Length: 628
Image (tube, rainbow, N blue to C red):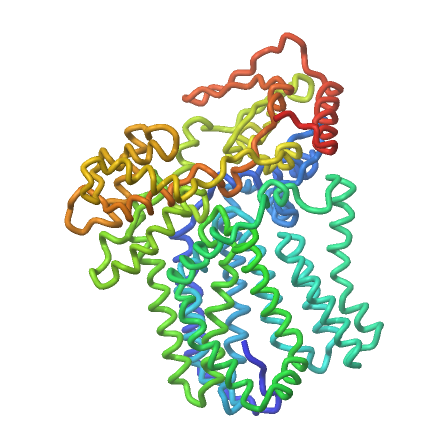
């Protein structure tokens, strides 16, 4: 992803290259299909698409409930369009279409790989481009997020397109180039809010081209024209939903969380080989400074779009890691970084050398390092029911200091609902399916207003399309998303230390199983129940004990107490204010065998009552008068 030498003579590409690229594409599609999964959150998008498909609008609960935006706009529109054109409902259509988005990403990368240049400005041998593509599709995070049922593959497609197009530069047709770049940014922003920084950067670069005389005002206006799609969506969102940002933003972003973010990022780097990136990026940066700071600054100005693309990709990753604290899903918000970063590092290596040896070695090293992600999958594939398993017991002795650190971070994140594994999400969905075996329609819903409160709302929302669901975590509820959090603070280290030392009744510096459980019970205010307590202990015994003993040192016990938490939890920190759910008089019961019962209310619910209840509680939010 470095700049191209425009005056270098083109060279013929070997015929085997197309066959190799086609084989890689087929292998990537097959690999993504093997990793394919759906999660409960995907069904949130599916419910929105269902309501749009049936003419109710892009809403969570049909009128008279006020519209709430809890799903990506463009992804919902795409799913509804596929349903209308092909008859394939979202659960069946989502993953095949998403893998198609991944393949389009691959094609874009293949064209970029064909433009890779070596240090002397000549086009790199075809083997270098193929190796770069292999390093990308050999990354599990990349392939994993070609599926899932969420809007991630579509957003990544536009993000990768936008970033790669930036490195092509304006060329001889800057207005056309800018219009294409703007379109990629606009479509990305219509899919997820992550695309808004790209749109802002595109507009800034357009202004920069105007100031430098590369484009006239008319050319800039036309080139930035596609960004008006974002303006239109923003105005529509404000008029339709009453907010400038999606409701999910208010539900998820509580306070900056760098303690979670650096752990999330560190585990990502270890599993995806990103720890290797600086080993190539720093020499590449140093080589750019050999001509002096002034020359380097001029070069950056000449490549302003590429600089903007790098800045946006890094900004998005940093924002999610250190402001939001990561993501509820494993590396979802870093999957675009995994694609672009892996490809970029091979491109940098190509620019550092005149021959193919260095970029080929770099691609091989990245592929080998990213094998940690596949190894983790092999070690933990049976952990889907409980959600987490540790890798230290299966690691070679020489690696165990590293795997212990990694496992501790994974457990820390797990207890805060961060980076939960895709196989766990899939298992969680499967556990819900027996209660919701088929879609249940209620023909009189528009007059009787059946209502139910749920925590995991995705699958119930899809299977009960006519039932109004109150989302108790607020992703699809305006009031809950703006209710101040009531989660307890993190446990203070001093309290953990005191409890651990008090539990060491014989003073030998070690805690046996029963002593450790007493200490944890003291820290968290109650003794953990048998099943949960044994699960926690099993995790930490696997991490710390090589000799089969069932005891931990006081320092290890303190680490356990500091890792487990019942405080902050990603996307699960908002809860309904007292009396809010009860005001709607939920009257839909779902038995374990899937039987749905709608209980009659003493006083029938009406549209006027529903509007009044929502208006009353929204007013309490605005005035800061929510009950505590």
